[in-house]
Image (cartoon, rainbow, N blue to C red; front, side):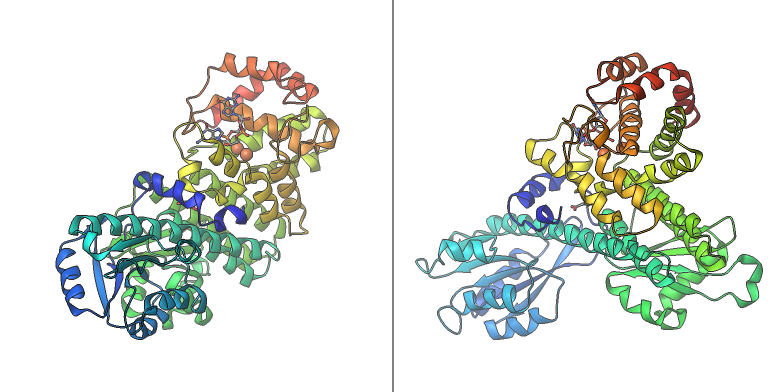
Length: 519
Ligand code: C2E
Ligand code: SIN
Ligand code: FE
Ligand code: FE
């Protein structure tokens, strides 16, 4: 997975084409563009040409530098610059190119996009410089008309936005992976929550700044109730070490307090403050900055996260029901993955129920059945590593996209596989083996028959039954007779024969579960 996400080339080009379909960042902060040129005239013209320029309802802000040296100091402490419009010849012949090396190598900034503009045709850099330093565009100043400049800037901003989203996703995943190794300490729970929060923010395509504040106390003990910051992402990460409300800026603290007071989600001009409370009374607020309008699905995602954070935190505070906490985190992750892939409704829940029924019919012990039911919901957790434009693509996948999609079992296994805890171990095994086929034709390992762990064989059947009998973004639900025909035909091919027999014999019980948990 990391291989794909790290690859700046073809993968991103694919993303770029899809960019028009993706959600716009909801923030209102301007796109920052650094203009580096020793010719004051160029600055004046650029600012004139871009006077009313907007991209995704956000204006731009031009930052002017008149030499490479000046540009170096500016770029060094501003990671939010999206694009550099860069002159090649300034204080010396190669000042522009040296500056690019500085940006990419010294500061390690691989995100910022670069458009080179030169007034000296014939000074074009070697092709390999363009490739090695990831330069977006190379233009002769005379050919760069106003319209062409605007078009080039739009393309570059799109690409910056996509890179930023992927980067945030990767960081979020990394935190989750780190946290899963030692999930039971409060500190690591915080890390886990921060990871999911980072993902959440990336997923909603908005500002990277968000906070998760928990009261950390039951409602009954109102008198001693104090706010505690449980997780934070982006710029707010600095608040987490302090942990208490005292270090928050006044306006943020007031908004959060207001949400706790009115006990419901509130919208502020610059933020969404999502409130939830667990059955035990732990209250939880997520503060998301830079959010304007969320659609229904996005609001739900925020609510799910907020509620599950509350549940996870109060378990952690109140007792050491380790298995319980583990189960809830697993469920949270499973649900998050499910919501992300727009599989609304009860997919995760149904798959767990089918698996338990199949396991019982198959003759597993009650302990094994319970374990299977707890571990099955995360079978697709590796889909968190799959870009939105592939995961939620309405139509068939291209061969390249399919390669990315097929990584989800291995990604999921890597995310969950570090833990020694029983549920997580089972989850990891299921994540890896749920697309293996009885006849050896599945992925990722091409295992066959009994060499596929029995949990994987069971989830495989349950997952496909559920996928076929419900709508997906890429297909409509099949009539139930077509589903059972398919499963019958795959007896001994995709699925273990005995499981297919049990499934068909007890079909009514499976369809009963289906109707108890509709989408
Ligand atoms: P999923 O949607 O959860 O589907 C799980 C499994 O159900 C699939 O695993 C496949 O074995 C079965 N399945 C689902 N729909 C169909 C269908 O129309 N025909 C048949 N014969 N089987 C079906 P598979 O194929 O390994 O796919 C794994 C995941 O890849 C899917 O999970 C889904 O997220 C994604 N995917 C597969 N095909 C497409 C597609 O055409 N477009 C998009 N956007 N995603 C796809
Ligand atoms: C998303 O999760 O919204 C986009 C995923 C990505 O581009 O990696
Ligand atoms: Fe899967
Ligand atoms: Fe699934």
